[in-house]
Amino acid sequence: MSQTREKKTDEFKVQGESGRIYTISQYTTQILPGSLSGTNSWMDGSKKYFVSGGDRANKIDDQFFHIVGADESAKRL
Image 1 (spheres, rainbow, N blue to C red):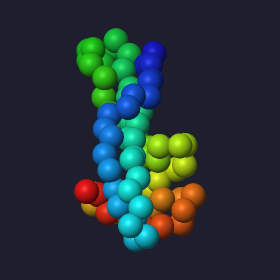
Image 2: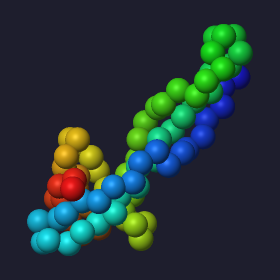
Image 3: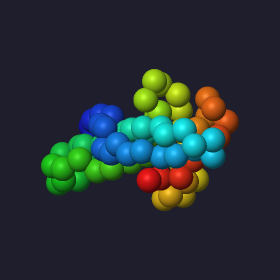
Image 4: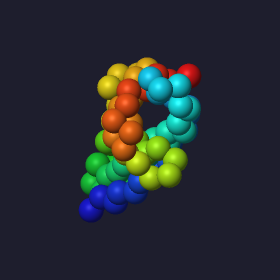
């Protein structure tokens, strides 16, 4: 039987079109496969992005994010 956990795996700043600076935290769902697989290390799964203060962010690509609460695009600094 496998286990899952959510772990903060990155934190960085982005700048929105308005000039505002946001801090984004990346959380990765990690999976520990069952013992039948022979693997005893956590494997990365899906990622979620949150702006400090709790709003969601959607990753557009490696450099650009959409800040949901502000309806604003932002570029990684």
